[in-house]
Image 1: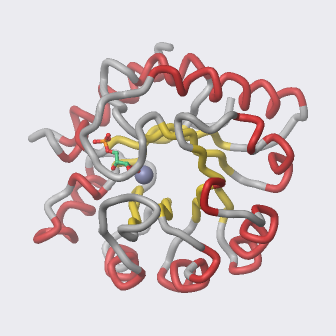
Image 2: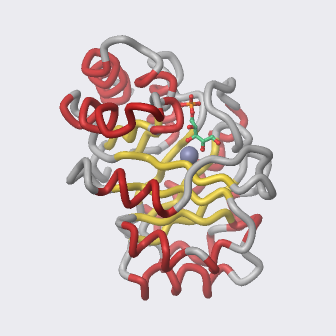
Length: 221
Ligand code: DX5
Ligand code: ZN
């Protein structure tokens, strides 16, 4: 299994103190920082743009895992990589030419992640597995933090982990949405190794304890 990573999502942080929040997550043991970019079209909410990614980049040396929940993401991949994204995730539902999108991310110099919504079959990413660094299986419908974990997304994680192992690939499998101390073990058991957690970290008053508990429960799975 690839390394286990806990990636706090700054969507649940206090934006008025974003620098402090990111540094606190790093000091608390976060492995990556997850950045949720929403455009008000692909998802109902509007959040973060490249300028904010650039600001976060100046606050931490941790890898920035940038999750694009936007229509026609190819237009912005270069801007987010220039701003400091280490990984860029694009939704298959928003990319009619997925190979081209993935190539664009890699040519810009970042790790390429493809993302599926909970109701999108795992098969949507099988043909491209050997060309990506990461697959993100959403465990909520994207758009907001603090939603309830959708358990029926887990068979997709299991299938994708099976294909990755069958083909001997080095692909991280990430889950995002409703990940808490209670749900993380199930996701880990299905084969995920990267865990995004917004509310379960930034919604607590002890980020270190929160991250330690998530890690412990994932390891125990
Ligand atoms: C949802 C975002 C998530 C969100 C997770 O659209 O992609 O990254 O921040 O929030 P929690 O962990 O609170 O469900
Ligand atoms: Zn996300």
